[in-house]
Image (cartoon, rainbow, N blue to C red; front, side, top):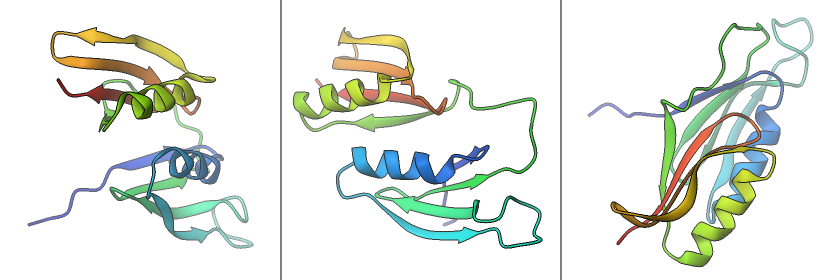
Length: 129
């Protein structure tokens, strides 16, 4: 079976985002970084391609300015193990971000929140019933 890997395109802050995400998700880490060199199409030292895991993600720093960015119609859905974990993640991800659905008790989840983080990436956090 083919492997499916979410791919995130940033405009100059991919490494900052990876460091942020891996600091929030226990057991995750940056597994590879390939950087642009001198005289290559991207800014020297910026991320040409990188991966980070617990669940593998790929990301880049695009040297091209696009007319689009992240959209909430695609989100990272994270099932939390405890109230402490969902509260911590929600608090961290809303810092500098935007709340789309406040953390609360919904018919489909004991505790759920949907946010767009400071990088514009959409996250749905849930604590199962």
